[in-house]
Image 1 (cartoon, helix red, strand yellow):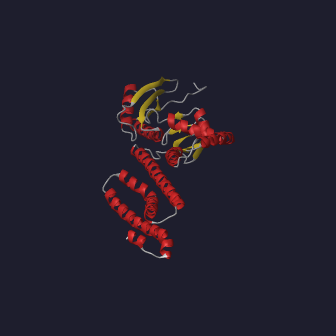
Image 2 (cartoon, rainbow, N blue to C red; image 1 turned 90 degrees about the vertical axis):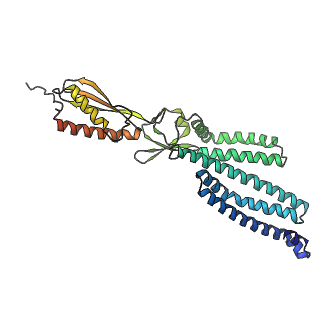
Image 3 (cartoon, helix red, strand yellow; image 1 turned 180 degrees about the vertical axis):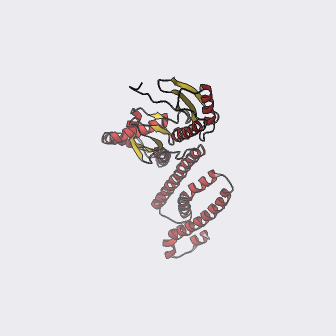
Length: 341
């Protein structure tokens, strides 16, 4: 069909030939794209998520590939001036390179998110991580285009050096926070999903590590925004390292007229039945602080899955111990009577 169009005569067709070829080729490429994506979507439905991630990454850039196909066909069969051929060929290369970069960077980000979710992270990839992946892939694309068009890189590097110095001075604080964010990602003192305590006393879950700031969602459902530079220069506690599991304890007081061994056995029985503790860790019952002027002190040590489980587990344990003491008639601590004989 295309050769027949080319061989047709007539001045109006000579003028409209490139546009007609481009439109027909572009529509045909769109139809082929639609059919291919439809077949691929049916295949991906029977496979695991990575196939679906590839499908979603191809939908938008594949439109640029249709455009590139139409441009190539137009160059092949249309009689274009040499200058137009040069521009169209260069535009085709630019479209192909950047569309491939878009597919690569988008697919890489989605695969990293998928891998993080498989490991149990609620928000596995921070904003600065996504941006770095996209920027790195796009810089590779720019390098390929510079080499293809045989453009000298040295003048650009010189201009970038002078301009970069001025920008660095103007955006000193922003750049400091940006590189601090990269430092956080590389050294990984905290990660998205970790439960931390800041130097200012707030506790919460890290929900994002961005270009300039890190966001921590507190247990009150508020968000604390910390500049990355301040975060790297302050002391914080990461309850997720090296393991999110942590040990907690509950102090129990009784009167003097009790059997210490019997109390310890009761505490061990109740601790073993509390919901939320890790069963692999045997509850530890300590006679601590032991005898005091007003009571006997015991300490029940258990292990919980994470920092967020500490409060509710301690509450459940205290309830069970109190009910057991009431049932068994365990005497409570006596008050110190001052000035009374």
